[in-house]
View 1 (tube, helix red, strand yellow):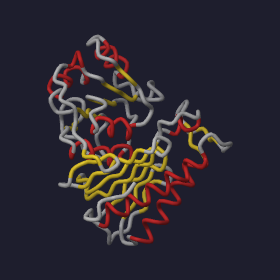
View 2 (cartoon, one colour; view 1 turned 90 degrees about the vertical axis):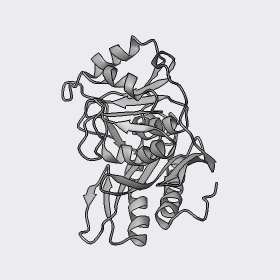
View 3 (cartoon, one colour; view 1 turned 180 degrees about the vertical axis):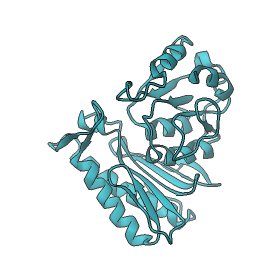
Length: 267
């Protein structure tokens, strides 16, 4: 699995570091490891989340000492001189990982404000590496990606993420799920926002939505550029512009379905 040499240094770095972190996760998959409950019910973190994040930060800080970093486990580490911020999810799909399910990944993206410059999502057990660079397209294991051409919501294959604690984020998650279910479309919950977005980019899913505070910038950044470079569209569920660190909801689709789905995903 190689990367085209003409990708820029940010993309090259994200590729190599994601591969290394992914192999670390692969080594821990289906072994005994520490599982630590988080504040939200049924949300957990493992010792491999921390190990993967430390590896990623060590490698990227050595390469880009003036950049900033926003990570799931350690939060933000800002350097005032840096104009680029790395959005890092060292193990997206931790609950899947903890239950020995292979749908998990490493997600790394380099951003300037709400503009994502490049992103990599690596699912080590599946041996699938998704990569995108602004203006260069999106790829899976070097094959160029394109979103699906599905134009009928009733025929669409759609995924979602639901909040662990609906009482804390009551944004009608179940109401929206019910409305979407009435379309008769196959609905799935894969347990990894990053993989959901990568699958929209690959045309495996026609759309993905999330409400109720269940997504964070590090979940979305790499997937955002994958979807956009593959020809798809992202917004908030009500159709407003998606802002990385501010938006409480996300709708990603192949673009053709977006106008149809907005009335269903916004209440």
